[in-house]
Image 1 (cartoon, rainbow, N blue to C red):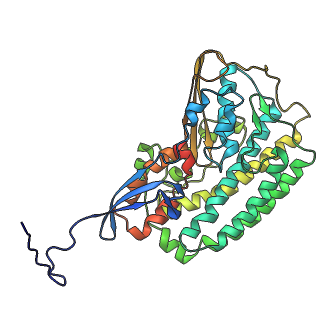
Image 2: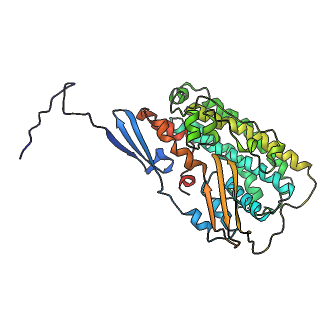
Length: 382
């Protein structure tokens, strides 16, 4: 049986168009920031539906926690968000210390805060430099990497690592700070503060940057809260929450922690929150360095048993990581390995809100919106 179809020409065509197009972005695509897949449904040039498809990079870190002892699991947590390695280590050791009742020395507490804030700046500089590339501006990334190298030098000097530091230990830090290191840190902070202003001058008031980001990809405060979005992305939507101020850990309660917020919730607001957070973290790092220089000499860690076992029970520790709230739910049965370690990563929750931002947007704005979510795929898939 044959079917005859008459195809008209011009705007009066009755059998052409009318069907939505399904477009796959990724999983291996420069716009997806890693192995993430977006399944877009398009009505012409407008995005009508988005489905983020994750799991292409899943490595089973939570399961691996169960067959590593409490010293070995630090290396696993170190890697899921490779831009926030020190902060990831910190959350794990805080959970184990809470479980075992181990109290790190005061010098270790302040050194951890200093290194965590430097790690936060390193993370933000990467995104501040790379986000403009997606909008056609390549120059800022070179400035951002210059400032990153300045901080990497002092981080490498103290820990021996450039990316995966492995400097935290249950009970403190691996070893003491090098002689004269605090002075070099203060100089690095001053240099980065000046360099960050140069990056801002390239981007902040650029009219093309504003045209591509202002009013684009708006995430409401209600949606941010409903999806469990946290960090700079949530604060850009007016969700004024920061664990360092609201549920302080380490010694953050002894510092004044300014929280950078915006209310617009668009791509520009998310970028500005991230950029302004750099200055806040540099100020906090300065304050930590000053406090460390005032502390008397003393240990940087405590001696722990060769075989470290946590008593039976459970605990939850959470930290304000560079990309948002990370949570660590530790369950122990009194053995040298965790019975369960559930990891709540910031990027996992943050990407769930992508459909709310992209629905109704133009395809041309897709990359600008996706890039403004500032996620790491390893942090999603764990």
